[in-house]
Image (cartoon, rainbow, N blue to C red; front, side, top):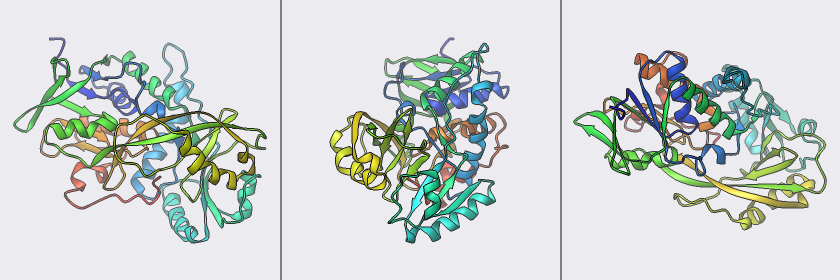
Length: 388
């Protein structure tokens, strides 16, 4: 039967496709079917993200995920080539910079120790050192910053397509249909039912549906604390260019900005109700972003908005971190969502580790058990102090 598989992956974005690729690349010989409702990925979260890559986290597990993923992204173009055609992901290692006020510095000193313990080459900078990185920066109200030169930003759409092409080359079958519900008998996953009524059967189903994942799980009475949360991004140009290319820079207010080619993008974590909404408002830039970036860099005072867009976070309301592994009460049902904006950054490591868990029953490369489903019931939350 063509609708039988060994593993079904719901969601063919960067997370689902990384898992499919890693399973097959690691020697999984079964049939993998990836079900993706959005054939051209028009509303997928990956290509709508800001593309930031950082290691400046405050929990061991998140730093370790980024450390592994960094090595993958550095060699992604060559290692993920298909038929000698390299994948250009435009990884700019221009750094990641958290600007800090006086009261933030002691916290950053603590974060620095954890990062160094995990091999991250982060630096705590005093205010004058910030000008070496961004000469135009207004440092009057700053005390310093936390900087990692290895980090930066990349093109998330190209990363996703790289994983998709490699997964297909290794034998993954992509079916562009929408999943309506999970098929469960007693305590065992059996497959999925599509919106059109067709059913696909497999003893392993991995839910990687991002902002839609918790809705699918909830339908099967398998709830997880994740909601779809819109985030707006704006692209703009300025009259007077900067002397140097920017790192991805996070202002103390939570507004971030970086270069996008010769232009710029900016965004912030606005207070919005959870919903699926792809609208963006010019007024959000004018009222909430422009005053802050113009204060921070005078070149941004004369800015022209060129376009905007919105994407969705699969936002974990409990501790803002990924939820990974087998759902405890249902054999064969795995989840990989709740990344809260960090999916693209963590996709290489998550794909590798879930491949290990599914094939061998245990993690080998990194221990991701802190991100298990059971942590909510056990009150073992993973509290990340650097979430925006």
